[in-house]
Image 1 (cartoon, rainbow, N blue to C red):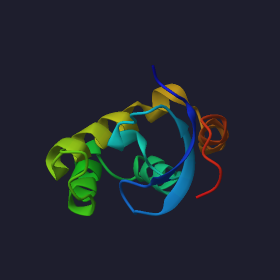
Image 2 (image 1 turned 30 degrees about the horizontal axis):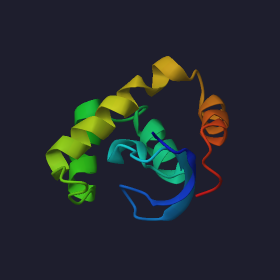
Image 3 (image 1 turned 60 degrees about the horizontal axis):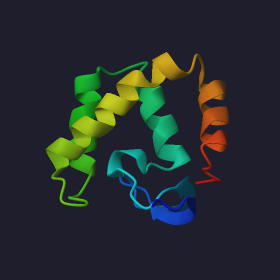
Image 4 (image 1 turned 90 degrees about the vertical axis):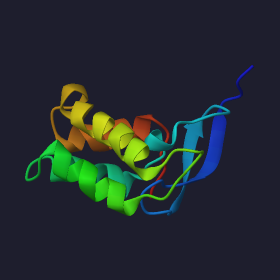
Length: 104
């Protein structure tokens, strides 16, 4: 049985601590603070997804047994889908609040 609640997490990209609503197991590619999510979203306007993936790969450390190339690809996949989920940066900010990220 999975127990949901607010947990103190460490951002996969910048290592900043922040509270996140989640279950017992959260994929490391989903553990990104507001600042990093918004930064990655902003990068979509000026960089290709391959450039974002390469930057992410250089920024992450192994986590939960995932090596940087695998983790960077998982993050890039999520970033690439953001425009399908939100139509603007403001909408993304509202989505982050709704997912339970409180600051960071």
